[in-house]
Length: 109
Image 1 (cartoon, rainbow, N blue to C red):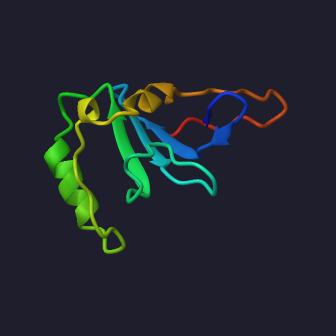
Image 2: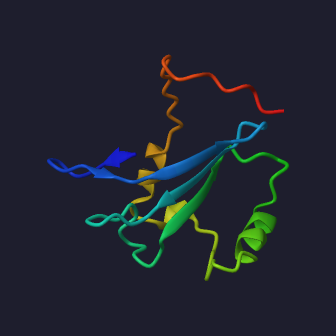
Image 3: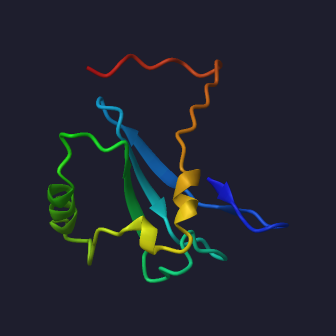
């Protein structure tokens, strides 16, 4: 993802997973060498974002599962209305680039 102030551009790598229920699950880095995705949360390394939350997804259970991973030191749910630069999250959109020269993979079953 690209973003930046006038005259600058920052690239923030992210991963995207689309579920069968059309949820969009993002893992995005907060830090690049020269910029922060959400500057007021400097202590945060990554954001785990779920868009189009399915009725089958239990956010508390997701958070509990994340915290059970040994290399995760902390995780918490954030209210975007309390974050000054939360509009940056609106820039997260699935980008589907197709390259016709690449071989097609069979569907996953």
